[in-house]
Length: 166
Image (cartoon, one colour):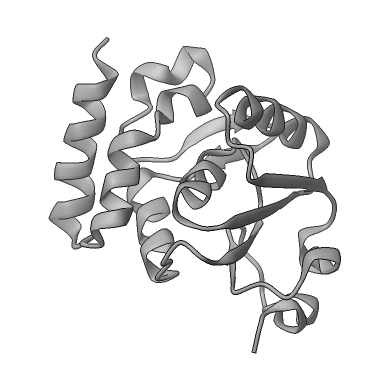
């Protein structure tokens, strides 16, 4: 399977076609190999316009959603970013390509361990991961220039607000 061709099609047909225009964001989506972040039996669908199961009742978000959230951060490359919800590590890899430091919190230990191992293997060395309740953030390394929450919540947790740089 030609993943590079599928990746190029995804960027053109899903991201650019829907208004993702930040050149740095688009360049990273051309580069990061999404197929490595999904279970092997789902690799053929890695570039589909839909979320995929990664186990433990969790999903990797559809590519457009990852791009939209990433573009909204307006990263310049010098930021310290906190990600809540490591999941497969795909969004984490994207953030690592675009910022100075990335700290990622995952509540499910098995997902955190898998993601950490994969990120290390792919040489994303600027990432620190932590198994914890994401609503508490990661105060040790705060304040953060940006915080990205990849999970739903009824309200923004106060600890996250407190850890965001003024």
